[in-house]
Amino acid sequence: MSSRRTFTSEYKRECAELVIKHGYQVKEAAKAMNVGLSSLQKWLRQYRNEMKGMTPKATAITAEQKRIQELEAQVKQLKRDKDLLKKASAFFAMEMHSTSK
Figure 1 (cartoon, rainbow, N blue to C red):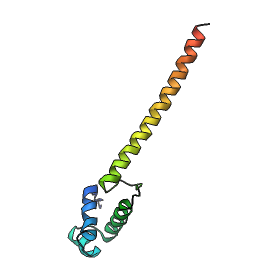
Figure 2 (spheres, helix red, strand yellow):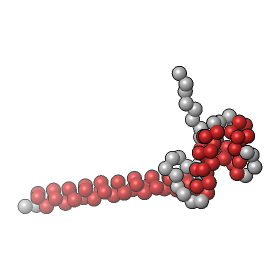
Figure 3 (cartoon, rainbow, N blue to C red):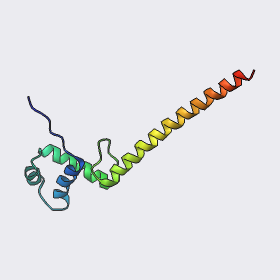
Figure 4 (cartoon, rainbow, N blue to C red):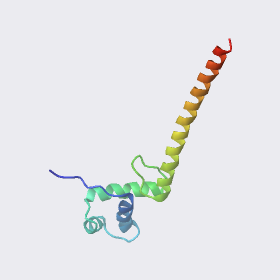
């Protein structure tokens, strides 16, 4: 039974930077970091897209995109909270109106 390895965003970024910033060939970097060639190619594509300002669907590699994902998650939570508060205030307004009759 084979187990699937998982890598942190920092590790993925380091692997991508070997190629982009330090001039390694993709095959050399994959071998040096002990990762599959296709995995490194995927991380490189994601890293380049993030550097262009594209927020990935997967967990971000760059710090800026990580922060954007965190803020987007906070916005979603705040919207859910706001909707819940609207429903609760409407409910209590109806309750107060019905008990005052």
